[in-house]
Each structure stands twice: as C-alpha cells, then as structure tokens.
Length: 156
Image 1 (cartoon, rainbow, N blue to C red):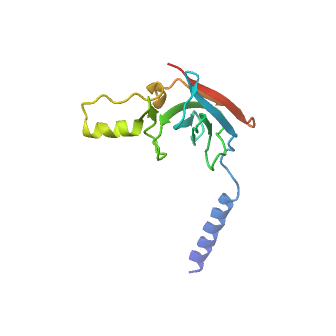
Image 2: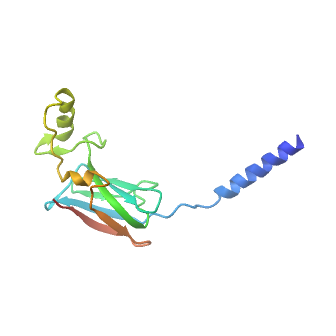
Image 3: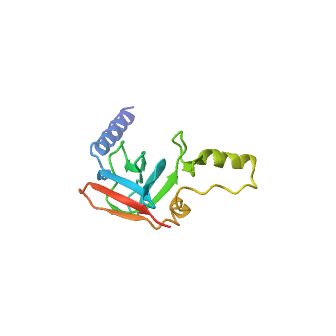
C-alpha cells in the first residue's frame, strides 16, 4: 500500500512538472485581405498549413475580404515559418462548402446536385486550384515577432 501511494505521488508530481510551462510556439498576429480579379473574396475560409509546425491556422473572410487568422485561440495569429495556403468557399451558415456565384447561392447549387447528379457542378467564385492543398500555388512566409497585414491575390 505504501508503494502504491508513493508511486501515485511521483506520477502526479511528474505530471504537474510537465504542465507548468507553455511548450507550444507563440503565434504571430496575422490579418489579411483576400482578392480575386481586383475584388474582395467574401464568404470564404483561408487556411494556412505550416511546413514544419504542428498547428494550422484559419480565418473567415468578411464582406471586404478581410480575415484574421486563428491557431489556438480566436484571432491569435499563425505560427512563424513557411505556409501553404488554401481557400475554401463557405455556406451562409458558416460551414465550408458554399459561397455566392453569379448571384446564385453556391450552397443551394451544390445541394441541387444531390437531386440531379447529371447536372454540371457550379464554378467556385475563384480558381478551384486554391481549394486543394496539392494544387494551390499560394504560400506565405511568416517571420517570428513581426505582425502581418497582407493582401493575398488569387490568380487564374
């Protein structure tokens, strides 16, 4: 019994010692604007995937195409280093998968495909290559300790 009690105390002490410090990297504040053909891209999610760090960051574009990235806590930024960037369209409810295309609701158009699989899927409001991690040619290098505020321009 004495051995079990001592082992438990040692285990708790080791656990508490490991929890004392913040071992995760500190994000760099990051704001940006997403544009395509000179116009802001609204209702989209911008995702930064780091080459070496373990945690991606993401942010949703607002009515002016502006976004703020989040890694651990809301709007805390992105980890330093080189990142591959993808952009996905969002539905009105805020879930990735839909956006406005030529005045039509992209989400409704995509949902209509469920009932009519022979119909051509709608085009996203920007080149589809940006929706794929392997296809996107967009990358950003974030320097440690330097808050970022940049414009990301999507190209055909």
